[in-house]
Amino acid sequence: MALVDERVAAARAGTERGQAPGAPGWWSRYGTALFFMGPALLMVALFFVAPVVITLGMSFTDMATTTGLSNWNWSGLDNYERMARGSFTLLILGNTIFYVAVTLAFNILAGLGIALLSTHVEPRTGGLFRAIWLLPRISPSVVYALMWTWAAAAPPYGVINQLVEPFGVEGRYWINTDPWLMVLLVNGFVGASFGMLVFTSAIRSIPEELFRAAWVDGASAWQIVRRITLPLLKWPILFVLTYQTMSLFSSYEYIYLITNGGPGLYVTEVWSLWAFHTALNSYFGNLEFGYGSALAAVLVVMGLVVSFVLLRLFRFNDLVSEPRIEIT
Amino acid sequence: MIVQTTPPPDLPPLARLAPPSATPRWLSGLGQVLPYVVLVVFTLPILLLYAWLAASSFFTRMEGLRPAGPFTLENWRFLWAPETVEALANKPPVIPLTINTLVFSLATAGVVLLISSMAGYALSRLFFPGRRIFLGSVLLLHSFPSVTLLIATFMVIRQLGLYDTLIGVILVKAAFEVPLGIWIMKGFFDTVPWELEMAALVDGAGRITTWWRIVMPLVRPGLLALGLLAFVSGWNEFLLPFIFMPSGSQATLSLLVRALLGEGRFVDYGLLTAVGLYYVAPVMLLFLFAQDQLMKIYGGGVKG
Image (cartoon, rainbow over all chains, first blue to last red):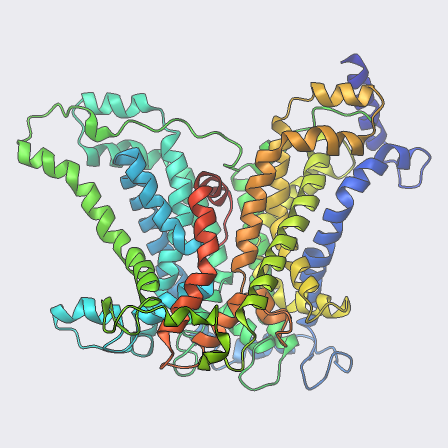
């Protein structure tokens, strides 16, 4: 023990003095750490740090298929001006906010509902229902989109038509007639599982005595949920809310697969899909990397800010404890 | 974050505790049945989707959930007689695609496991400058929506000369999974008692030997859980091969399903569902056998 403590103290003293790499003893002290951390540092540098810098940098250029990857010019704030003046910017911004708000509400409410109900019923059955709700998440996105495309298919194929016909709703190809409904359903059902799992483990960690006491005092099931469970779920709900807001703003995979932003011009286009279309998957063949990067940069900056807030808000720093053993 | 905490035992269902109030019997009966009814109704859409996927692949024609033709295995003949399937005429054959998908997901899982367990070990056991900052940024990166970086990643991949190669896609996929992986593995290393390790170190074994020979075998459950997660995530991946391997020389199954689906409204649903079911089946089987691990790990960190 003593040996370890001394070494730890020595190692810490070393860093506090701010020893530079290359100073005598630096390699023998931190070489091992560098070996273990090297690959991860390289990955983070190549695929996180560099892309963030490149996204921001490219957003100030006119780089596109027409300029090639070598003949581009710095264009100052042109891309951002174009974004602000663009005739579709407001439409797409509105779409994005609508999509995020409604999907988020669906995800949180469904996640909360399934978590509450599945912990209320017999445990094995509850677990089965949670497993079913996780299915969309663990299925390939293309297969999940395939199932919904069929469900929305025109008569006589689609099951949605079969289900609503008895209520006098006319059969139709839902993706064309009600694209938003489909986008929201597809994303709603796949996104609910995240909240469901977080809320389930939060509900399970509530001491059972609280429920028993309330029950003995004559509280109804609804009162228990309202007065005990929900208040104790405040932090998990806030966490899921923040986390999913950010991931919804940046996600477009399912929209791409279901409507690809259509039908018609930008009807279900959201911001992240717009960036993707502009820079990587253009209708017009000209991939505008610069403009697309400016569109993405908005999301990148937002992602960084929200991630940082999450990190602070949920005190992740407390989890970052000092290592317990140190022999170099 | 939730991964390494063992969940408390299940609560006994509240419904079994005797309700103290004098509700009529039929009403308290209703109170017990109602949660199940609500659960079934809300879960029904998901069940219907999967039920149709399975049914449709075994009938010549389906109208909604009603089979409108006889039972058949014809839809599955892409497995034994791919040359007779018209829709697949100018598509890469399914078996090589499956092998590509398998290689892609196994390689992704391998890279993620190696990098995460190395960095996770260092963060759990070693002291070095920048440790806290790196640990904080791992969490930051984990919640950061990496999909927003794809345009710039495209440039990085081109610069590395890995555009249109499976290796490039594997590296990007692995990189996006690594922050969660490091965090999970650090959690597992933290729970390993260090007496054994210290004994080995004091006996003169090097750090690397100790890590590989002594500590790694002790975190097998963590490696299994993370490996499963990375494998499933790789198996399902669509956007990365779609964007970074446009020529499709080493295409994966997701690209085939997408191509078949994208061919318009009058697609051959029999074939499409058979291919879809074939594609999703391995994940379903894994889920069946490793449900607990996957549930825990998905609760700890999923984007979407």
